[in-house]
Amino acid sequence: MTTESRVKGVVIAAQGPIVDVKFKTLEDLPAINETIKVTAFDGRVIVLVVAEHLPEHIVRCLSFGPTLNLKRNSEAEATGGSRKIPVGESLFGRIINVTGEPIDDKGKIVSKMTASVEKDISRAFLNPDRLLGQEPKILETGIKIIDLLFPMIKGSKTGIIGGAGLGKTVLMLELIHNVIAKHEGVCVFTGAGERIREGNELYLEFERQKMLDKIMFAFGQMNEPPGAKFGIAFTGITMAEYLQEQNNEVLFFIDNVYRFVQAGAEMSTLLGRVPSETGYQPTLASEVSSFQERIRTKEGGSITAIETVYVPADDLTDPAVVTIFSYLNSIIVLSRERSQLKLHPAIDPLLSSCSNLDASIVGREHFTITQEIMKIFTKYKELKKIVPVVGIEELAKSSRTLYDRAQKLENFLTQPFFVAEAYTGRKGEYVPLKDTLEGCEKIISGRLDDVPEHKFYSIGKVADALKE
Image 1: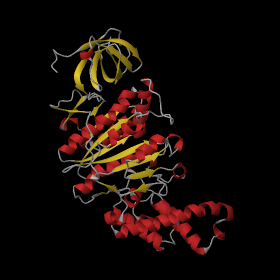
Image 2: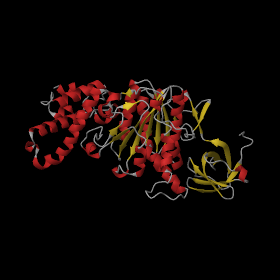
Image 3: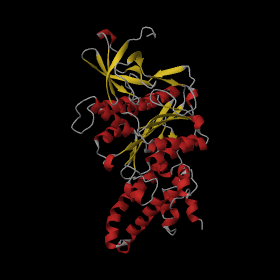
């Protein structure tokens, strides 16, 4: 649609982020998901997206920005299409918002290419990795517990799940740091509904590490309207899809998927829709799928997704959390109990799961070691309930040995992080998988039974425990 032929309407009501726009005739009505631009009293251009059609040629829209200073009867111009954002090499090291505008005070983004954020995902691909005949490729992260129990495969989706203050963002930052530093590839980071302070710290940290030339950022933070927090997930995945089409191995990070779902619930309430019996929006499953189904492998390039999922009140049965679970290959659950014991990363191996932990993918030796470790941790969990009552001396010798080895394994699977050096005072360590397997094998075989358990806490390789 040319500029001259664009249809214009007028704003007749604005209630928070919900704006009603009236058009002259039925033929003038913009389509659902089409964008409309309105200029506020202070000169700001506010982007609206059509959510539903009302009687009398009125469209109800969601705003992507604050509607302060928006006047009644302001002219609203339909753009004739859905939301488009700039894509291309010029976005590396830049931060954009939900509409593709730069928010990092580094000037305009110069890019000749744009991509539509709305995509048709009706064509289904059943397990595309297998269809393309590709062998699974393991992505080493240098984080011991993840490489050992939750190996990441290129093209897979990993969820980092936990309540407030358990270190989801820190673990994600460490993953970004290690994977980008050690592997060739590009990264898209999407901040959906999280604190702007964390986004600022993230950007400055990567600037300090000189890694900005490999990362694109899209932020729709906690202080923004629900439309921005919801739409930013699609902005981020559109950038990742563009990079994938250029035959890149793309790492896609989103912090936090639950906030994206929560924004959808807010939008649904603002539009007056009746919630489902769980309290969430009735369109919960379709909204999550419209985002998650776009994270998939194609010939030539892959998107490997790492998503943090906030768990309200530490309730893993929350309907939104369960809906997100169904799309993930690995579910890494952070435990408040382990966090309080300062066992960082605070991953609970018994609550977590990973479909990639298979002998055909990781190899027989790796698989055998992990199964032995899981057996030890399962028995250790039972013994932890008994020991405070009867004391460790009352356990059978075999149980006492297992209890000691489990504590050593628990301590060995902690490690200092690069991104937390300023807070812990310890230098971060990248631990290759072979060193992790070697250390675990020595502990479970009993070769380190005479080394005190505290020596294994927050170290890199097992050799560090043997130092004086």
